[in-house]
Each structure stands twice: as structure tokens, then as C-alpha cells.
Length: 309
Image 1 (cartoon, rainbow, N blue to C red):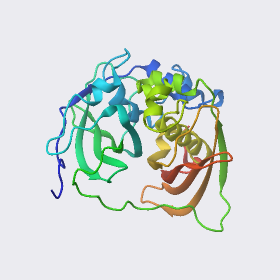
Image 2 (cartoon, helix red, strand yellow; image 1 turned 180 degrees about the horizontal axis):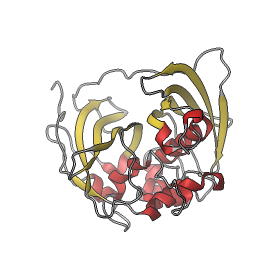
Image 3 (cartoon, rainbow, N blue to C red; image 1 turned 135 degrees about the vertical axis):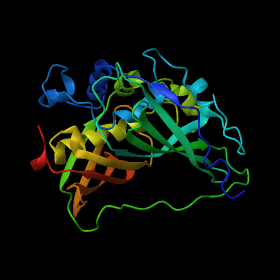
């Protein structure tokens, strides 16, 4: 059992979005009135925030609420156990942006093409399923974004599968003060607003699923909320809030965030630029007075001085 499930392709899934969806997403991750190009559909430079593709595998092609558990168990991966989607949390996400999404998908056909890239047995703690999801324009074949995802199925390991490789590490530089620090104050409504983008996992609205996974008697905020809100803070700090200035973004979900917590992010410029002028940024987010919640953070951002807005 060297690479069970690897290469398995899920059936393509149609995805749609409207300008209203782009506005809601930007609002839900902390965009502010000084970023009107993200929040006002009549702005001459109206843009979709660059990490919006991360929500499309959840939202799909409906404006209605989705049964999260049913959608997750719809297709089984061959040659691996059938995992229980009621006990799954995000492990890490990595997005590469190739083209900016149009502000609406109306009049065009987009779909997600998802492939399994790894299924790993971590023993008693659980199992990891790695996938790659491409957001594709069906008519042209253009890939707008590629998303590498790791889902951790809590307590569902020990089936004899491979343990998996070690991931690349991007630790904060030792002895160097961060180039910027910013915070995000969450509240009881943070997850309830964010879920309206299409990520309706009950874990983030009802404390019962979390109790069964050992998270205590409170709900937890979507890891992807913190992931997106931190991307917003980084793009605002380094890229002038211009959606075209984010090329790549990734981090690991290190610990849960409880509603009401303040998340503090520290970020460092490395001085390393790619051939297109995007600088590597290393970052880490912590709950104020508590644990690291986003680790192994790395982004490629074009400096604000080169912003197009």
C-alpha cells in the first residue's frame, strides 16, 4: 500500500458566484471602507479578493445552504477507508493564483477539478487526505487558481497506510523583529457571518460536533476564516490591498480559535523576489496570550509601490 488513492479524480463540480458573493466575502474577512474596490460593485477597480477561490469547493453552484456532511461523503476514495466527515478539520491550505477571477461568473462556465494527491495514516490521532483543486474555465481550459488542501480526519487512523512525507518548513526568522504586526479581534458572530460564504460545517455554529472531537463546550471559528482574514491583513500591509499583488499564500492550522479571541499576526519580508517581482513573506499568527494558530505561513506578494490601483 504505497500510495493508496493517489491520482483519484473526483467528478468535476460546477461553481458559480455573483458580485454579491464577492462583496460578502470581502466583508466577512475584514475588508474596510478604505478598500472600497473590494466592497463596492460600482468602483472602477472592483475586484474579487484573491483567496476567494478557496470558498468555491464549499459553495459550488448554489446560493442556498448546503448540507456539509452530505457533500463531504458524496464520493468515496478507492482503496482507503471511508472516513467520517463529521470528525474532520483543516490541516493546511496553499493557493496559487494564476488569473484574477471575474467579478461574476455569469455568462461563463467554471468548474472545480479535484485530484487526490495523498492519503496518509497518522496512527491513533487520525488520517490526512491531501487534494489539489483547480478552478477552471470550462470553455478555454484556463486554470485561474490551484488549491492544495489537507483535511485531518480526527481519530480515524491506524489502517496501515503510509505515514506521508515531511512538509517544507517556513519558521519565523530568529532574532529579527517583524516588518509588520496586525491583529484581528473576533467575536461571537465572526463564524456565523463567514459561513454564509458557503462553508456550512456545523462545527462552527453548534458546540456539539466540537465536543465529540475534544474541542470543549464552545464552537470554534473556521480555520479558513483565520486563513483568509490573515491573507487580507498581509495584502493590505504589503500589497496595497490590490488583488493582483497576491500570487501565492499558504499556512498550517496549528490550533483552533474560539470566538472572541484576538489573533495577532507577525510578518517578515525575506528580501527574496521571484522573476515577476513578488516578494516572499513569512508569517505566524497567535491567539493573544495563547497558542500559535497559523504556522508555517508563507506568501508571495508584490510590493505596494507596484500596485495597480
